[in-house]
Length: 166
Length: 461
Image (cartoon, rainbow over all chains, first blue to last red; front, side, top):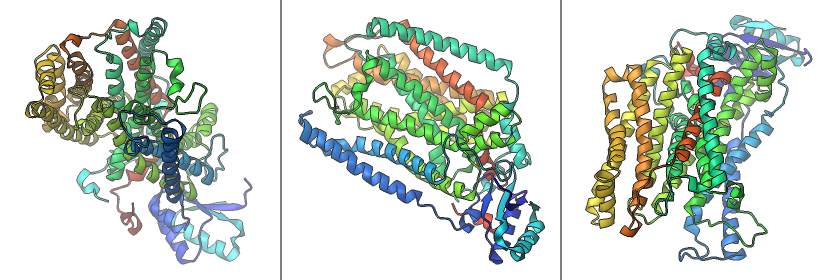
C-alpha cells in the first residue's frame, strides 16, 4: 500500500472513543478505524449501514417459496403417491423440511453476501495498516488529502489521547 | 443489557492488557507440543484405527456383524447417533442461547463448545450412514431427478427430515464456528514470528483487518446466524425425536418427546462442555479466562436442566399408568423399570436426575475434580437414556412372539470406540492449533468493569 496516509494509534477503547468524539465535533471523520474487537460507538459514528439483515430476510422468503413449490411439484404434479392416507399435498408435514432447509439457505447465502460485501474471502491478502490493530492497538486512518489545515486539527486531537504515526 | 458485572464480578481474572490476553490464549499454539498431547493423540488414533477396522468388517460382512435381530433393528448405532447429536447440540446452544440472553461470560467457553459440536456431529453422522448397510448408495437420499424412475424421497418421513436437519446442522455450526475464528486467525497472523504460521493462519484469516466496515457486517452476520441458529438448535433435536415419536411403538409414541429430547441434548452437551473446559483449564492453565465462576455458572445451569429431566422421567412413568394403555404400562413398568433392562433405566435415572442435584452444594461446585466426575457421570447417564428409549421399546412389541433381547456385538462396540477416538483426536487438534478461547470476544468484555465513558455504558446491543 502506498504511504499516502497517516494514522492515529490509541492504546485503549476509551481514548479512541474520546478522540473520535472530539474529531466528530470538529466535523472530521477518519477514513477508517481498525480495532481488535467491535466498538459500537465507532460503528455508529462512522455512519456506515449494513443491510445484511434485510438480505437475509429476502433469502429466507425466496427459500420458503422455492422449497414449498418444489415439494408441491414433486408430490402433486410429477409423481403423486399416497403416504399413509395423506393428501398428495400433505402441507403441514412439509413444514419441517421447509424450516430447516430455509435456515440452511439463509446461512449459506448470508455468509456469501458477507464475504462479498466485506471482501473477506479465502486467499485474500490483508491490507495491513497497523500490524497490531488485531492485537491491542486501536487505529484511525486518515488520508493525506484532507488538507493542511484539517491535518493540524486532527494531529492535535490525536496527540492528546494517543500517538500519530506517519 | 440484563446482567451488569456487579452480579458476576470481573469476567477474567488478573488485570490483563489486550496483548497479554492474545499472548496467553495463543501460548499453546506457539509453545512446543507437550508430551501428554502425543500420548493422548496416539491413544485416540489407536481407538480410531480400531473403529475403522470395525467399519471395514461391517462393510465387508454386512450389518449381520452387529448384534441386531428381527425385533431390534436399531441397536447401538442409533443409540450412539442420538447420543452424539445430543452432545453436538450444546456448542451451538451454548453460543446462541447465551448470546440471545446477553450472557457475557459465554465468551470464554463458546469457542470450545462450538469446536466440540462440529466434531460430535461428524461422529453422529457416521452411524446412520453405516446403518444404511450400503453407504455408497447414500446419495439416494438426496431429492434429485434421476434415472431410477420417479424415485423422489418421501417428504413426510421423519427419516428424511432427519437427514435434512443433520446436514443443515453440521454446515451451519461449522460455518458459525469458523467465522467466529476469522478475527482470531488475523491476530495470530499479525503477532506470530513464524513465517509458516503467518502464511497458514493468514490464509485462513481471509484478509481480515478489523476495520469498522468489516466489524459492522460481521456483527450483522452474527445477529442473523445467531437468530436463525437458535431455531435450528430446537428444531434439529425435535426432528430426531420424531424418528421415534411418529412411530406407533409403545414408549416412543408420546407427545413429550420433542421437548424431552431437546432438553436432554442440551443437558448432555453442557455436561460435555464442562468436561472439556475443566480439562482445558487444567492442561493449559486457562484459569484466568475460565474462572471458578464460569464453572459455577455451568453447574447451576445443569441443576436446572437436571430437574427438567427428572420431571420428564416422572411424567413418562405417570402417563404410562394414567393413560390406562396396557402397552405403555408394560413397556415402562415391566420392561424399563423392573424388567430385563432395569439396570439401564436406573442408571439413567440416578445419573441424570439424582446425582446432578449435588450441584446445589457450593462445596461440590467449587471442587473441580468432583465437578469433572459428575460431568462424566451425566454423559454416561445420557447414553443410558438413549439405550433405554431405543432398545427397550423394540424388545417388547405388541406381539409376544416378537419379543427378543439385544446385546451388541464387539463390532458395534468397536465402532463406538472409534468415534470416541475421532472425537478426542478432533478436540486435541483443536487444543493444539486453534485459539481455544475467542480472543476478540474476550477482549471486548475484558475492560468491562473499568470506569467507563458515556459511550460504553450506553452500549447498545
